[in-house]
Image (cartoon, rainbow, N blue to C red; front, side):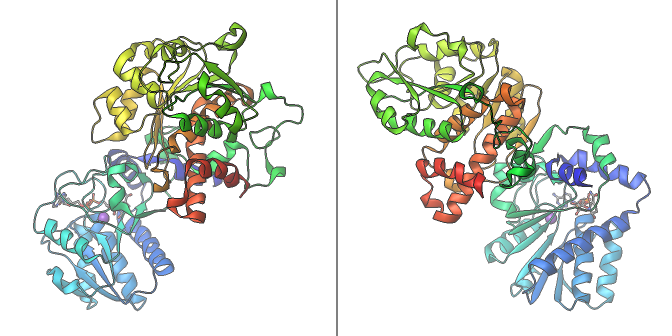
Length: 524
Ligand SMILES: NC(=O)C1=CN([C@@H]2O[C@H](COP(=O)(O)OP(=O)(O)OC[C@H]3O[C@@H](n4cnc5c(N)ncnc54)[C@H](O)[C@@H]3O)[C@@H](O)[C@H]2O)[C@@H](O)CC1
Ligand SMILES: [K+]
């Protein structure tokens, strides 16, 4: 049962996959009317439990089963004593929906086809269209949706806000701006797409007991697209909410008593320039929070003492620089072999003036994380072929602008675009944003379902680069996959920002604060 809950939290489906799963349930013998009754009972209970202080609820009913769900909820709320009004301008309904409509009318519940009758409602339930909508919404429904959006009355959408594409999250002409979306059974892909975020509000999954066997029959044992969840991230970090006794014996948060600094990872950071000295400090602070055993930071010679003053524990390598303070060449002490490090993270604050350092690191045979100017150099000057031919794993962490520069084509489906980029380059691609997407060369994809706009600030990405760089040095020592480390870093970074924003407002989450909260959030 515990495993099923874990699976349900992680799984993400397209409209076609959901339809296939639904067909299996129906083929198994579950009557569709019973399924609708069960789902709608759960929705009604959720509304009563969480939104009980409303006087009048407007129920928006469409022609399909989303509308059927809404009508069953209308009936249940009516019997619980709530004032319910039904809106529907359609004249043709699917059979089950038509039957529920007839019964609702026979109970004396008021039904209207003029939306102006609903301006006094204090909440709406949106059952106009559910998953699988493909074509643009036309008038009169389009103008009804605009009217509802302009009223700013809270809307609870059933399954998905009406008007959103289930897979891409695109607005099909117009869409309901929901305050809450009660997603039914399994998370729909579109709800995780950034372009849907202004419409979906707070999302909740209504688990109506889809059998594990049906999910796995359609999606396989390891679904291609997954949400990054709390339990998964915590299990990788080896924490159970700050109770060390429950941790696995050796984990990132519960080290072996006889570990030593070289078993906690050795990271080479290459970052900073005179113009962007702060980027080097922030990246290094992110790395520090990862608990990396040995941190080496290559910066222009002129920044060496600045870095030492902020990070006395690090080995700071001063590199030859241009007269504008840009590293010209990576020179390691004692002619050290670059492959002796466990990983390299490079890019923040480098500028695009000189590209020889990036060329040098691309030739290394250890995991390489490229961010910021390393990506810009790759896009503008070196090209992707050097990346494709690397003999060790590469991780690229672009934001949308950098992604566009690297891959040019980004479709309406951001998640699909990241998958394509990862398959084409063989790298792990991490597209940063409100819903960060990570994909590997096999198409396995993870989406971070929770974050905060506090991270929309210069420096946040530098912290992630450092944190992620530190974590990937530990892959070999902790027997954790690279992908698990990457997804965990993303989760950890956003959770730190959420905690910091909760305690200091979204304006109070500067880079140094964020780095400090990385440690605080895991002590919570
Ligand atoms: N998947 C499941 O297991 C379950 C699904 N249920 C509900 O069923 C919903 C899906 O039901 P449906 O497949 O009937 O889909 P909809 O409820 O979205 O209705 C589809 C109908 O809307 C009309 N339509 C489609 N696009 C239109 C457009 N652009 N303009 C005007 N009319 C348009 C068509 O007549 C179509 O038949 C789910 O979202 C959910 O609410 C639940 O009742 C039970 C469980
Ligand atoms: K809906």
